[in-house]
Length: 435
Ligand SMILES: Cc1ncc(COP(=O)(O)O)c(C=O)c1O
Image (cartoon, rainbow, N blue to C red; front, side, top):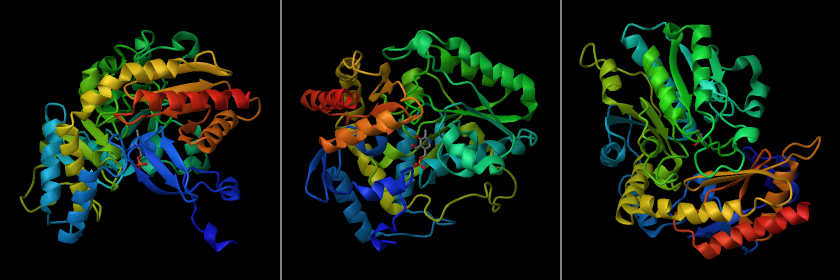
């Protein structure tokens, strides 16, 4: 074995990768530099993470200062000043009523934490039998056991079979090529798909169900945009049955859909919100669960010295991550980044949809600065065509993402129209070559 290949890459075909490794060694603004000195235009903002661009000077400076001031302090029974400040700021930009913040180190941990909070709150309110979770087909909620279980992407689940968390069911996903292909923004068709929740509730009985978890816009399964009225209807059904609603906003928060949170853009309030990625602009790993005051209070009982929620990570609220988060939030505020992202949406939409007539394109969809081009799969080789397009774009100096047979796009909030043109001209050429 070649010791230079000890690194086992996540969500990657490792054997193929090492035949022709793609290695990044630097980044600045909208560009990466590879180990062989090539410049690549990043059309995916890192991995949905870095809407402000790479190595934003204010975030870099904040992290540099923090690491020399307080590198780490114990996170249990002791707090650090930056985590306290970041929680206050987050709650300040969150939808009304999200007053409490639990820090994690990733989106996956935020999801599993949110699921545990839901269970604990029901139990504290005398409904400990509410233990079931409902997810959605094609949902992605990270890779820990809870998130994998409520997730609905078959490839992410099949290797773990019966080992997943029991008591989980899924509602149907919201995508239909026949009814909504080439929608711009939210599809007009499909609000009735929310009623599938009633079917699942009837099967298990509401009294056994703790929470429904959905991404407001499903990201990893290829940007599935909620039909008009769909999220509102999910909220109504959850309310009717005392089921908590968790919005997994790991991708959709911090400007990706032109607002701090998708809950605000869509005007639907969940009970818990998970976030990560853009919280630090991707600079230091960090996630969080935002919690409504009533749920938090449900756990605040018993003797004062009693730990109310037996859960936490060594690095919950890590000072370096919190400093990066504080700096990112300041930049979002000072540079009006969410408005900037919102203003780019029409140009992005137009550039994306201009590929409608390219070979194999069967659907294009978008909301905010999330976009997807779905390709017809190659017979017998699902995903191969999109992967080839990804490779060709990479060779041509543009980074996009492939997921299944979908090409996904996530420009920076201030991506220029020239850069958009370059990204989609490169994709167009790649599609023609693959044809
Ligand atoms: C909606 C959603 N939830 C959870 C996660 C998991 O986050 P992480 O990879 O930081 O664990 C992701 C990652 O893409 C995500 O998109």
